Image 1 (cartoon, rainbow, N blue to C red):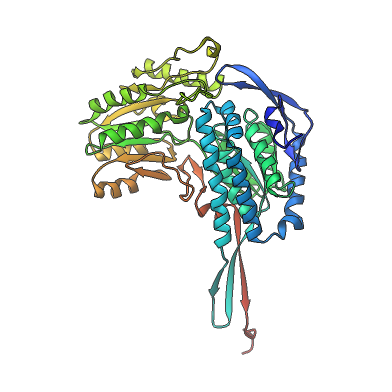
Image 2 (cartoon, rainbow, N blue to C red):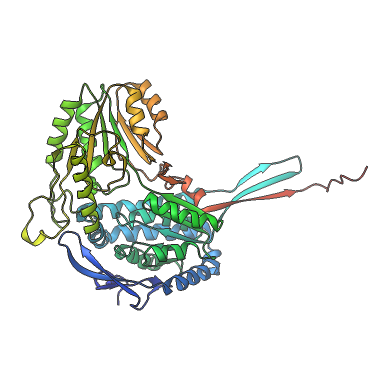
Length: 495
């Protein structure tokens, strides 16, 4: 069997020590969000945890990995990046079947993801230990060392791309990694592990365990696991983080968001409308940084809403395989029901839907899919749940404000602090507001401009630690100081 045949199988199993495990344990149906029909199954087998941890521990300690020079690890990372790019057209549909994104979007996402491996290869090649003079005869060497076995728990909306935010720097620093994708989205992670093997990584350095919350907790609390990197909901991050911290392990997480997108009175209105459209509705709104709260100065409010509706109406909803589709369905029946419940509650509380709010008319073959139109809700107040809680779907609220202070108070008035954005032509305001917003990333006159060179993470209940940028290398390593004295020992008891 070729290393890529698993993408066509009807059953996905955990991938450990360079091979797929037998199909056993609980069988989870995988439902195509475009049709509502089962297309495959994944198997949740708790016994895979011990096998994966053992494989990763052995591989981490082996000479084949531990004795690799940084340049050799960098070469493997570059090879893996190239393989991901060359298999983008195969990886993309696996992601689309898990999250509903268009094939064009996921294939492009795969090609972009390859750059993470090249970036951290370059970082590894240029990284040097730090030498510091302590005294005339003493010096200290400050070095980064790997942590050991790292568990990377990934989300359904980007199991491979967001998983690579963890995998690339973790491998660069010399760790072994166990990927734990959702049971509903295993395909791309398994293929990633197969590609790592083809690139030349030793068996066991990249394992995949398919699992549920129980499997995640078992992995995270295993005594041989040194670190957990998690992307998912804030509620889950709190529970898991407490257990990981209780074991004195490293915990990094990127959790929920409810990002504000502010349009001040001096904004470039046309650009702001375009950015607010893509910021809220890209990937059918299933992104952690979705600009789901648009705040508009009262003087521009009516004009903005009119143009915003017109802009969102241009979005074409359709089957992910269609080249005409801008966005596809939401990922699951659970998400579909949850999103519609938020819309209904907002209307009951006094909100007014000015666009969307229902499923679009679809081909009869797609009628059972999880389709939700881009939805814009106005006449809302900050105390409504639709304005306070992460919906994770194509739903955006639009509020007006009178002053800069009011806009910042509304923007900061939620428990989340993942991202924020605002539009202004005033350079002083740009500097002032960017520092007052409580968010790990603030975009000025742009939105959703995520770049691998820029650290990413949350304030408040949106996360701990940072991914991307050189800062991620610190998260996936531990610092050791080696202090050497070249002079004679000083005797404090000589006199």
